[in-house]
Length: 102
Image 1 (tube, rainbow, N blue to C red):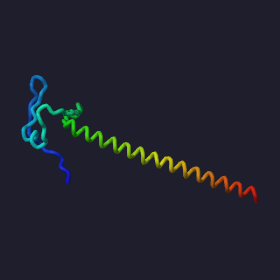
Image 2 (image 1 turned 90 degrees about the horizontal axis):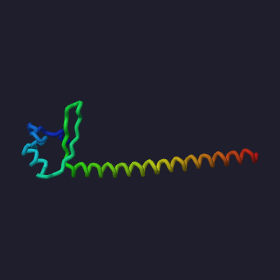
Image 3 (image 1 turned 90 degrees about the vertical axis):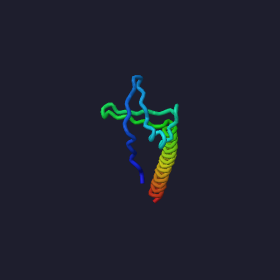
Image 4 (image 1 turned 60 degrees about the horizontal axis):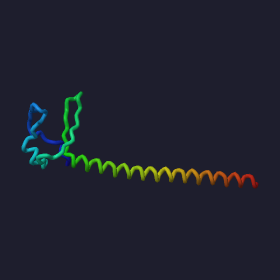
């Protein structure tokens, strides 16, 4: 079963734009001092999402592997379709030749 997240409390932004991540979140998510984070936001909805950069890097790697797999899959299918079209054309040509010989 997948969890839909958890509310770890509230925080405030300081004068320099810094926010404090609640201790429980730091412990459960194993966030260490100096760890790099990726920040996404949606101004219209007023939301921020903060993701550990190593998690984002693994996600990006996974997506690139999936993209490569799909390229191979569809590339192979495309070649197979061309081969099938070639076979059909050859069959049509041989039928035409047979009709001409009658």
